[in-house]
Length: 192
Image 1 (cartoon, rainbow, N blue to C red):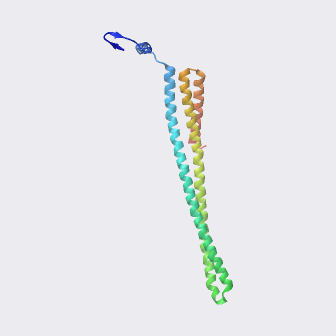
Image 2: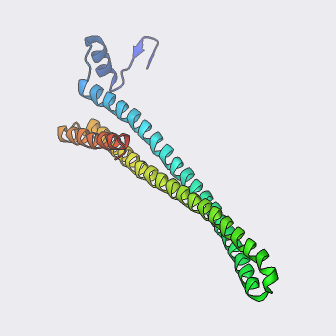
Image 3: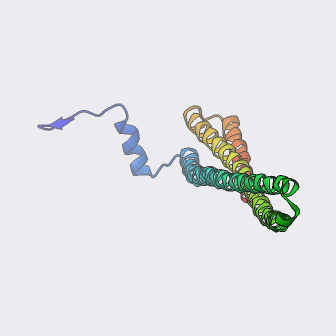
C-alpha cells in the first residue's frame, strides 16, 4: 500500500520482486502445470469420445428395438396367415369334393405368402441382432473411454497434490496413472 511517500510491502511482495528482477522461475511448478494442462486437454477429448460412444450405443439399441418390433409384426402376420391356412385346410376336409379345388388354391397361396413373410421376419431379426451387437461394441468402447478419462482425472488430482507437497514419488505416481489413462485411451482407439 502506498500513499504520500509511504510504502508498505506485503509478505510476498519481496519474493515476487526478487523473482521478477532476477528472472527466477520454478521449473518444477511450470513443468507440472504444463503437464496438467495437457492431461486436461486429452481428458476432455477422451470424455467427449466416451459421451459419443454412449450416445451411439443408445441409438443402436433403439434401432435394434425397432427392428425387433418390426420382426414381431411380421411374425404376427405369419401367424395370421397360418390361421387362415388352417381354416382353409379344415374347410378342405369338410366341403364336398367339387369345392376342394378352391381351398387347395388358398392353402397353396397361404404357404407361399408365409414363406415370404417368414423370410422378412428372419431378416428383421438378423438386423435387430446386428444393431444389438453394434450397441454392445459401443458400450464396451464407452467403458474404455470412461476408464481412460477417470485415470487422467486422478493423474490431474495427483499433479495438484504434487505441486502442493513437492514430493517426487507423487510426481512419479502422477506419470504412472497418466500413462495408464493414455494406454486405456489407446485401447479405445484400437477398439479393444
